[in-house]
Image 1: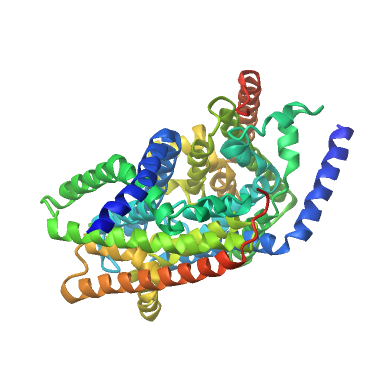
Image 2: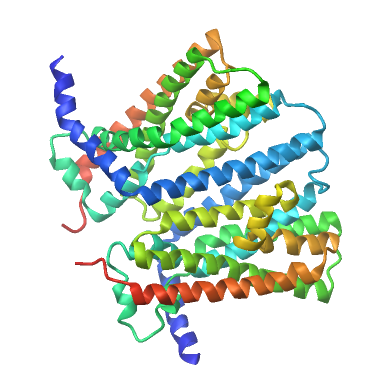
Length: 263
Length: 275
């Protein structure tokens, strides 16, 4: 474990050097994600210029849920972005072999190799939106709900990471799984809005199968409305744990089935 | 008419290669398609909730049927006019392979375009037609009569082709940024968000405050999605229709000119890394 953190520190230092070298690129990346979020906020604002409530939620409550969804997404984006590269091209181009030749767990190696600072654009937007919404709504933060919120950020991040690990693992069989992963990842769009606007089929899918609803709506609804905490946080934690276990099992099976694409 | 034979002989090969590539990467193809459909359903449910909340059957001049049509059409147009040329070009520039296009007796933009057209033909057959039929069936059941208009449809097809050429050159110019920047990927995300917003993919331009909407309609982005969709829905007629086509063509000329200028500049100064 100590060895892992020592190695991670070395990798992070390398990443920071790279960041200093390519400052313009970092600014571009972070700005891109920021602009993407701003356009969505404009979208929500235009809708709310015409209606007072959406399924019983007012403007700032929707903004709160939206901001909430960006936090676990951003944290995951910051730490595990390299999984995308595995899914898209690292395996296909035959560059995956290097992870197998090093004396460290390949999954940890893949993850620690990249710290994607672009994610700060998403993460900071999320935090700012949550702060603004909290002030406007007068949300009362106590030790209890802050602790639960942090727990939700943690299992939300795990849900994102698990889906990315599973998606990247598929590349170990089929060489390039980026687009499959993209489909699952994109379904997180559903999670940015109250799940009550969807029909029951969509609601069940994003609650139990691709459980993105637990990365934002359910925990946020506890903070806003005091919805059943056992479901919002207990089931959320359990689902995240199960999903991560399955993802790692799949990844390990993939490693055993892996044949290099290189020449 | 000898040049037609020449173009066909020279660029036909690129087109066939593009079509074969599209068939070979079926998973990618399917993946993006499912992803885009999911996004459409998210938007559909949001608009449905908005209509329910407003309690009226017409929201800013759109009925719920209009809105559903709009969401699916805007995304299929966005999907069809989306090109990989930025990524392709950026990768070639970074790895130095761009030289392979420069030493061949072909136009860089034409060869890229020809490769992509192959890809688009396959995509139109497998994705565009089924979606179109689905949309029309939905419209029939929602309205109770066949609203399909062959003239509007033809206008739409012409407009989509113009949109595609416009998008292609815009992406090409973004791809050329790789001459200066490493993080083209970040830029692509930025470009994607900007296009989605200003082209009317996210929100119909008619929903913006009056003056803002009018300004957005003049920008090249509107010509990429909003124009063909509004034509299909029959909301642009007569003079407005001709004006819309004119705007599309003007923007295409402007973008081709910019792309040519950058390319001429690059050809003189390019120092390829690696070999």
